[in-house]
Image (cartoon, rainbow, N blue to C red):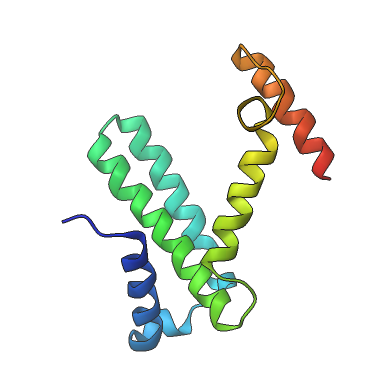
Length: 121
């Protein structure tokens, strides 16, 4: 079974309504879980077990989805804002793909990435 992204959003919303632990969480209380899940992704990558990597990446993504759900409940932002900001950043920093710059090597790409990132600050 392949779930869609919107299914995970709906699961997070339901957990926030029906699960006592999830109801209690805030973005602050989830910070340690976010770090723990990121570390577990790195450990899974080091193990070379791609099924485990996929599982741990799912846990990390779901933690972020839950944080986005919490933010949306207070009308701070929602997943749409997160996705929009991510897309805008990737496009603005990859000017050799989405613009007129040229990068033929990974080193040139990194140099342009850093130059474009510096413009944002």
